[in-house]
Length: 284
Image 1 (tube, rainbow, N blue to C red):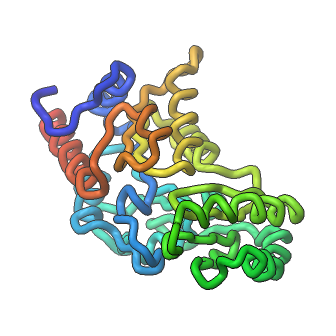
Image 2 (image 1 turned 90 degrees about the vertical axis):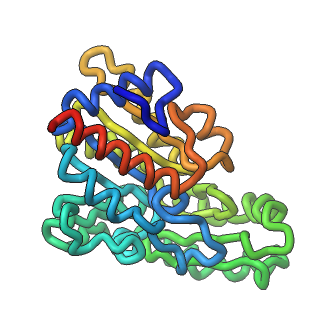
């Protein structure tokens, strides 16, 4: 495969990369957004795709079977912050938002989404009282995603202490209304159960008949996608080789299971460009 700056360090990861290079038309490249394609910023509303990310995706997408972004954000927000709409080369990009509950297709420009879970309205109404009771309301920031609510502690005087203090009360509030709490990097998201990035990724792999998969993520919410790739790799009846990439080292649970750990979104962009170059060299 030649010398490349970012090479998988595990046998399973090498097999995944080799499968992508051997049959790129059957490969799926799937990526998280925040922390993977976009840098983590204090205000999530200011997050934007890392410079060069869209260009890298556009260079890679025509050379593989499919490219997907799988994110906890609403699909249309990820599309807007990523700058994915109307980009040459990304004509068949799919963005699976709200952990796969929503779907945006570049081919149509439309978002398909279910009705909000009834518990969301109840949690939205009850959240201020919980935050007031914690004494942290002035230190945190709440993001209303429509189908979910996220409480960010990054702005608190002690972000990790605020995260731990809120985890229990928010878990009780969510459970009372049929929701779950999804922890992340200094964020606690209250959302409906039954859908995660692993379910979304597995469903899309089967939908398009992918014969190999690359997944890149950076946070606890990506563990479900990692587990899905591991299951696909170990399927005795129809194994799907896979490459797991971790963006950053802030989440040790993710880095420990990765085939390739990169310093952050800038290196992910470089890796996407490198993969596009490898595919160009293989296909001529």
